[in-house]
Length: 58
Image 1 (cartoon, one colour):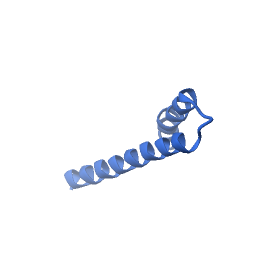
Image 2 (tube, one colour):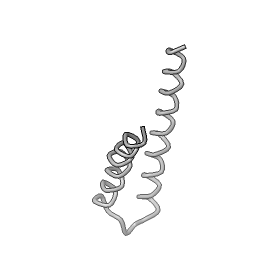
Image 3 (tube, one colour):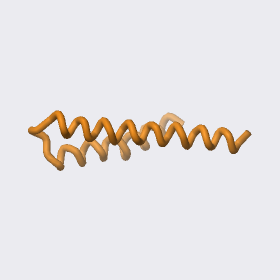
């Protein structure tokens, strides 16, 4: 049903977001030479560019 598909999609998105945040925090922790500006660029690329790429593929 539509409701079950929406719930599944939500769970998948939630998991992906948690994984992305964890990976970004790990990236910062493991790279002392990278500052907040580099982190913000990574976040921008992750959310802005991946959304645009997904829209192009749709």
